[in-house]
Each structure stands twice: as structure tokens, then as C-alpha cells.
Image (cartoon, rainbow, N blue to C red; front, side, top):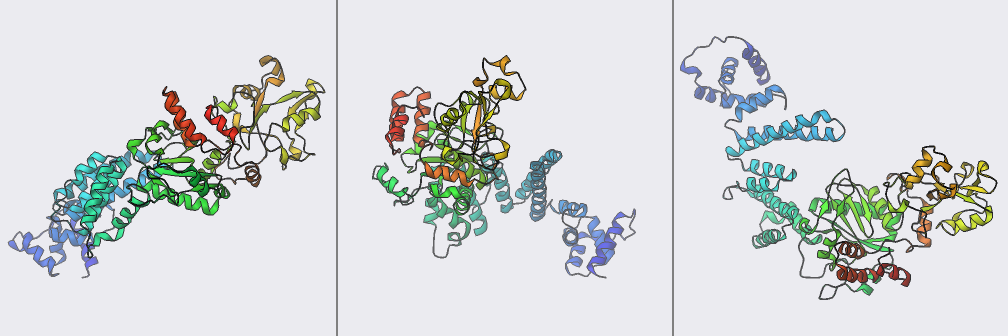
Length: 568
């Protein structure tokens, strides 16, 4: 009888109500174990061995089951009372179920949320059982699970259960990797340095730990400036001995770029993600030629005070950048955090760990002077009044209605928009409002010219009070004294662009605008953010110092004057 047939026979016998077998010593578990190990057992003997939970029989039977089915679970649970490998299998199985269900939850299946939590709790229980059975692998696995959940305290205490005298190189490497990652995640650079020193002291020519993941991690510690080398390693930018950057040297480095951007993250996983985003950005996005992007750099969480909520834009206390500012040789900085809405605030860019290269490109366009074409928040400063000067490459906030001579009005409007030179002389931008009289005009290019550069309403200020009233169909005369009191946002193109949807193209026309006047709407350096944060904390003298640092990054007297006055 083949082994498979034996198992089928066994399952039939297990469900029968009575098995008529002798109760003599022939069927003692020790004897059955010997028979099973020498493959000299009968189906009845094997069935009885299973019935009394004989380890040898269970070990063979479990291999004939389908992973995850009820029989596989039953046999492993019986084995797991004394077998750490069976406990580990169960733990990994329930962890797999939990991960699968959490992924389904993210995709919209909320029904899996509670069951996923249950499976994760079961995984932890079986890891703990394996640890009681002296499984060093279980110690690592449970520590990693706690670390993935952000519970550093439990991860550290669990990792402390390792018996350092009996672990092999694989376990030792995994433990050291985890200790490094926990210290980096926590911002504990002192511990990172201690671990690195221990690693360097224990290196030998034959030491396997010099290769593989651990070696790669150590290399990344220096690449991303988690720890500093004794030599200058700052992306070809030279600093003096005091760490103060030579602006002339930096300008020389960035002479082929409109601006420079240094991105930061708080752990190695995110830094590697940034590396991939930067490579993809440089390879696929037209805006890449305007921005010098250095290798991303680590920043300790202890140096940040940020609010991370998926439902709102990332917000940080930007005075905290004081801690690294003297060692940053770029005009702008960016920060990747675990979660939160991507945004740009003056000279600082924020993204989260789920953002792709399209989001990065969109946010970089804001640094370069482009404004969103989707609705901004209701109280956004951009949409509170008609602009007094040009403020973006692609958006102008202007009155919706005008009265007077059409030719004169057109000439006046063209002076207020950055893309005036791209509008054909035959492309209309004003339409007569007949019910208001022959000399009343509504700003906007008609649909007959929708494929041309013109004046098209943007959703940018859709949530502003004035426009909301208009869209609600209110009578103009009931809300304001004159139709000319209404204003809204306008854009050059009628089509959807990446300023509206991340996955849309960044239009060639916008690249032309940027190339024509590259610095006209460029965000100030991140030093301006520090100055603003200090001013809000009433540290006026310190704020002035950082305004001066920000002004050093400007190439025109006009922009320097704006920066020094804090009027950006």
C-alpha cells in the first residue's frame, strides 16, 4: 500500500466510531514510533498512532495535507505542543492570512479588518509558543512583526530573549539587522554608532556577516548619511571646515539647474524608496532638467515635530530644520514620512511613503512656481482677492467681468498673465455679456478656441466665497454692488494637466513658460521657512538671521529685497 493510500485509509478510520484493536503493549507509542520510523507499519497501526497523537505519525501525516486546510491546521496544532517548527509554521500561516486580509482592507474590503486582527493575534500566540520551545527563529520573527507594527518597545524586549551563545550566523545577522533598523527608526544614532563599531571590530576575512544584507545596510549608513565618514562626501559640493557651505561653490554646482533639492527620510526603507523615485524622475520627467537632486539623506525622527495623518496634509514645525540646515547644500529640502498628504510649503516639499514619481513631479512643479488646478481649500490665500501681481506660471486670479473698451481691457489683462505671449492675437479672451449692456465683458476664451492657449476657468478657486455664490446661481446684483466684484482663477489651457490629476502629462506649454522666466515664481529657499517659523515663535532677531541666509540664494536684487522684507 502506498503512503498516499495509507493516509486515505487513515482518514476513514479516524472518523469511524470504534476501532477494534488489541490493547496489548504492541500498540505502545514507543513501539509504534519505531515501526513508523522504519516504514514497517500497517494502516491500522498508523491510524492508531495518529489517534494517540504519536509525533512520528503526525509528522508524516502533516506532509500529506494541503497547507492551510483544516487537517493541516489540526496536525500542526498537535505537533506544536512539543515541536517549535510546527509552531513557526502556524505563526507564519496566520501572519500570511493577516497580511492578505489587511491588503484587501486597503483595497476597500472593510469586512476583513476584524478577522485580520484576529489572525495577527493568533500569529503572535504561535510565535510565543515556538519561543517557549527555544526557537531562535521565532524570536527574530516576532521581533520583526512588532517592529513592522511600530511597537519598538516590544520588538526590543522580544529580541532580548535571544540566546547569543547558541545562535547561528543567519540568526546573528538577522538580529543585528533588526537592531540597526530599530535604532535608525527611533532616531537613536548613538546606538547605531555602537552597533557599527561592534560590527567593524568583529569583521574578519572569513566572517560571513561581511557579505549580504548586513554589508549592504552598513554601506547605506554612509550613503544616506545616517553616520558620517571622516572624508567629505556631499555630492560633489565642498564645504569649509566649519561646515558652512560656500554659496559660490554651490551655485557653480547647480549652474545647469534652476534649483537644487535635498530629500530626507527617517529610515532606510524610505530612503531606498526615495532613491528609486529620484532615478525614475530623472529618467522620465521633463522637469528633471530644472532640478539638481542629490542622494537622499537620513534625518532622525528626534529632530522633527510633524503631524502625519492620512486625511490631511503633512505639517511640521519647520524651525526644527535648524538642526541640519548648516549641513545642507541645497536651496530646497524635502521630507518623506510614513503617511500624510503631499504638499509644498514655500521652500519645503513633503511626500509620504505611498507616493509615486507622478506625485513627486507634481510637488516639484510647485517649488518651480506652478499652482494646483484642482480646488484649493476654501480659505487659501491665493483665492481671497484679485491678484495684485503675477504669482505663478499657470494661474492668474482676476476679475470675471469688465466694463469698457474691449481692446483696452484685453491689453490690460495681458499685462497681468504670465502666458500672454503665447496667446494668439486672434484668440478671444473676452465675451460680451448682452444682458449687462454692450460694454460689459466676461473674461474667458470660448469653446470654439478650446485647443488654443487662452483664458480658461480653473478649479483652483472653486471653493472661494464669491465663486461659490456664482455657481449656486445667485443673482449678481443680490450679492455685490457690481458684477465686476466677482473674481476667479484662470489657466492657459482648457485640457486637464498634471496640476489637476497626478497621472496626466505635464504640458509642453508649461515647460515653455518655465524656460522663458525660470526664476520668476520659484519658491524661496527652505531657510525662509525657518525664518517664518521663528518669527511665529516671536524670535524676531533669529528670524532676521535666517531671512538673510535665504536671501543669499537669490540671484536678483528684486527677489532678495522681497525675501529680506519677509513678503514672499
